[in-house]
Image 1: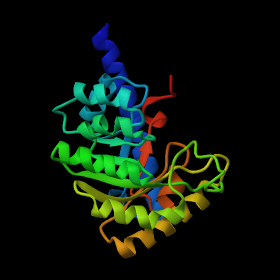
Image 2 (image 1 turned 90 degrees about the vertical axis):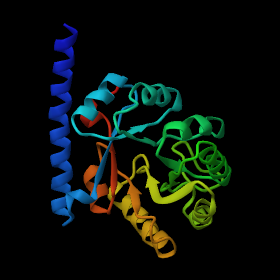
Image 3 (image 1 turned 120 degrees about the vertical axis):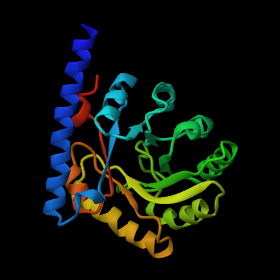
Length: 239
């Protein structure tokens, strides 16, 4: 029975992956982009390590997680599969050491204190961590606004970029953002693309733009996203 269940789950994920990959290809055709420019990150939050193993069997090596308490045991359980782990949730400094032990890319860098902690942890583990600066694309005031989704105010990006670029053990990868609730994703991602262009003027190697989820994939690709974070469209509705 377990073998049958595993086979059925593998087929379900395989079919969903095929649809998502075609969606990415279609979005790239519409935007006159090469699909090879867009990396799929499978977001596995709430799903077991067995699903991560199935994803690896199906050729998915970029895996994303939002919470360290879920990600750390999954990373340990799937060692040796050649996976690259992306930490994409809001990160507290007391979780940095754990996250740095398995993550290859941290998408949610939004303050100097976090940069210092990540640098120290990278040096401790003798590794390099790629860091993306998370940008708050909402209309909230930087002092009084709602920061529930995380992210630095756009005016803080230059200073934070310099801090990451100068920090031992860290690599400035680029920018990440989540489209604001209730906002037009295309407009938000266009703003992110503008900020990314400005960032590359000073940091040419910071070429990553992490944007787009299952519901706004097309808009993100049209705006130049290099990495899309897809969960429910691959693994199903969250439990």
